[in-house]
Image 1: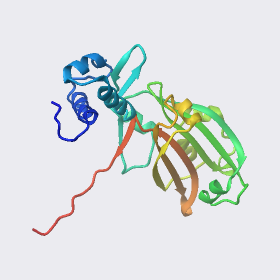
Image 2 (image 1 turned 90 degrees about the vertical axis):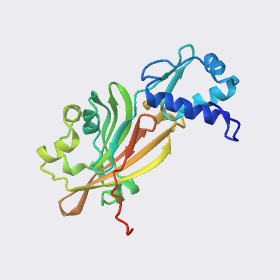
Image 3 (image 1 turned 135 degrees about the horizontal axis):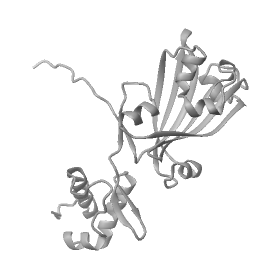
Image 4 (image 1 turned 180 degrees about the horizontal axis):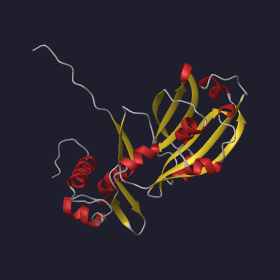
Length: 245
């Protein structure tokens, strides 16, 4: 129960609520008790209860809506850091239905930053693919992909609607994909990103930047993905080094 130990009441409540979610007492997709009931149960005013619930909403454990109360969200989708980022593989492994909504496929002059990553001259034409990635029809990732225009002539929106890009590159255009670098950076969403991902502006997200290389260590694909921080998290499995006793 709550104690007068200098730890704010809302923080103590938050830890209690997290344990209720972890134990299954508050089950996924189910409404939790209303604020008035929680206030009575823990002998506190509405302020600490609301503050604790607000934090759990921001952390992606709860959702709330006016008139419908608060409910527990499904567990976050987890992915290890040991393999190349693949949205399709990630979602399939979790037994969810995945879908990509193609927003645009255009040929544009490369900006200085895109040209630098792809080892091109600034202004050299690149294909830009913008798409929204969904799991069980819930938007999770807003993605922009860039690749030199000359490496995949004739690529169409229909191609991308039916076949993963990496499969198209390797099988149709005979471009082997050898290795990749990935960069992870915490960000907050701007107005457009928030609208597309159906979250609040300024919500925490993860920027994943991926550069994939082909033979000759030539960079061939640059992707930038804004991933919802409330629905996905990454983990690493590490080896504990032996120590002299």
